Image 1 (cartoon, rainbow, N blue to C red):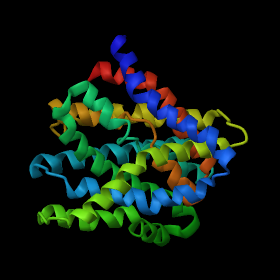
Image 2 (cartoon, one colour; image 1 turned 30 degrees about the vertical axis):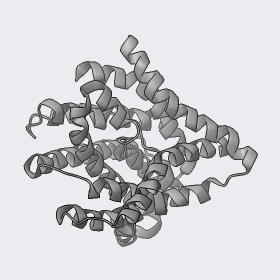
Image 3 (cartoon, rainbow, N blue to C red; image 1 turned 135 degrees about the vertical axis):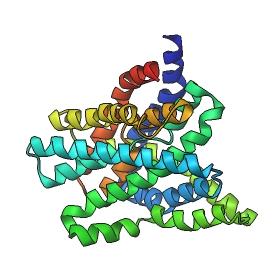
Image 4 (cartoon, one colour; image 1 turned 180 degrees about the vertical axis):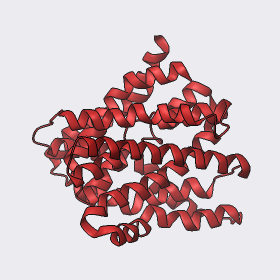
Length: 301
């Protein structure tokens, strides 16, 4: 019980503190959530992914297996969300929002510290692999889902490849693969931008929440959040054996699949006008509920 309290105090409390800060100061300073989210979407997120990719040092065989494992779990979680939304006879926009929430987990500012607490510093490499793969998968599927109804299939595919964070991954992979030395001034500039992403995302979430006139904890929010928190880790545990995931790759993979919906999901929803209030509320609800669901997953892994 004391260990779980430390997780809450050292990981969840700082996160909720920044969200609360954004909630309190946003209206008073008249900060526009869309403007600040565009900074995160077009500048900070690409810099963050470039920073992680360019420094990645992966063992190819295991990394490829982990990548396919993570992608399969994410896509199947999205498929579960799609089927459930269809069975509930929800609108096409709500179905897209369900898929966005289900595939884009908070594998960064939640995933890293929880994994480090559970397994120690030796698991950071595995956590980084899953972070990179799941971030790209989340952006690709999330942006496609967000633009599907508005622009159709071709427009959705085009929008995915125009996503700034995805575009930043290409030069980052080239830099990492070719072992290119980035100029110090550029590396430091990118590092500064990358370091700003997480606090900006959390502040933006608080500002978005302040703009919601009434938080409605309805059936769709609860179901969408549960799909993210329950289906993800359940599928990760079921698929670990077929993908020969054991030890740290299995443990970190299951934990990353159990993370709540990412703040970036709300940024995508806001940027593409995909039911931003529903997505933002689901991000908050899944984050709060993860204090309970992650307890169970931590006990299992």
